[in-house]
Amino acid sequence: MLTLTSLLSDFKQLFYPHICSGCGTDILSAGNMLCAKCFVTLPSTLYAQYANNPIEKIFSGRLKIEAAHAEFYFAKESLIQHLVHQLKYKSNKEIGIYLGEMMGRSMQNSKRFHSVDALIPLPMYPDKERKRGYNQAAVICEGMSQVMNVPVYNNVLIRGRFTETQTKKHRTERWENVEGSFAIKNEERIRGKHLLLVDDVITTGATLEASGSRLLKIEGVKLSIATLTTATK
Image (cartoon, rainbow, N blue to C red):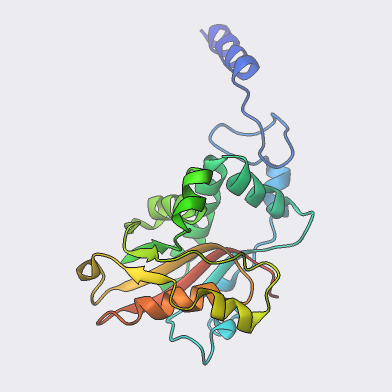
């Protein structure tokens, strides 16, 4: 029986290989997306544990938030950049869910996010989402939700108009680019709730500030923010 099980496993690995999303090795446990070597090299921030961390400082004086967190430091040519690229441009939704689960565990281990009622993925412009096939922030939320046991509200915050790419804009230009581009649907779902606004990356925080400001206009809403990566140390 053991031999048959081993043969079936080898057959499955041959035709449906289970490999590390980081380095491509097939030496990893079933159910894991990363091998042990890649897993331990992920640059965790540990920000979930600490008030007044660098992510919260980004929004100081700009947006009233309860808490904020980013799971990993982002650097060019790094493992985390490769994984985010896989999520956003290579249709690897599984790695997004996996990393979302990791972020969810970090936040579960912190008492600072226990009062969150719902996860709100930062919406994409509809044409961009149709082209990609999904919203990467919603995929990350899916993994977080499974760990945190908190629902995802996908159709509450919506992108109301097209905005140009933020990549080459400075902070003021980024704010002007996104101001007024978000709208609320099904407002009654979020009244009086503590919402966790989620995105894949934070740079200046302009887009999260604009969308968060819109959410805070709803009666009784409290807001926290979480991103998968940050360039801020």
